[in-house]
Length: 142
Image (tube, rainbow, N blue to C red; front, side):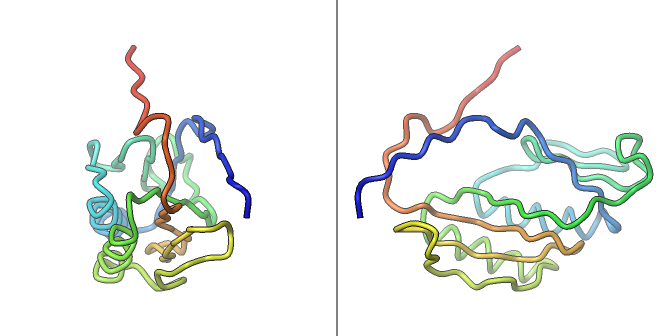
């Protein structure tokens, strides 16, 4: 197969999930994202955030009283072991299997694992294989 180059910019600015049980969601997301090296950003009574992912109760003013529907979110992992650790931590913290860690046919080197979070959202960790990145991350300072 020919060499592929994928540009990943900042397409999504932020996402909010509105959940039934904030404590269950926090336990799940803290565990799986810790395995990916992503710390909790902060928390309040009716929400918490991790980078640009905000998770709240329906009582949060931003939620307007309604739960969000089923979403698919994929987080990048640095290697296959990180994908495996994400999957294991998720199962131990309220997640349900939605696809064991393994190679996927999406492109050469794609290794992912899928979990359903406590609200049924499809949460994935993916390692895209050996690749050269133009930057590890971007930092926006205001």
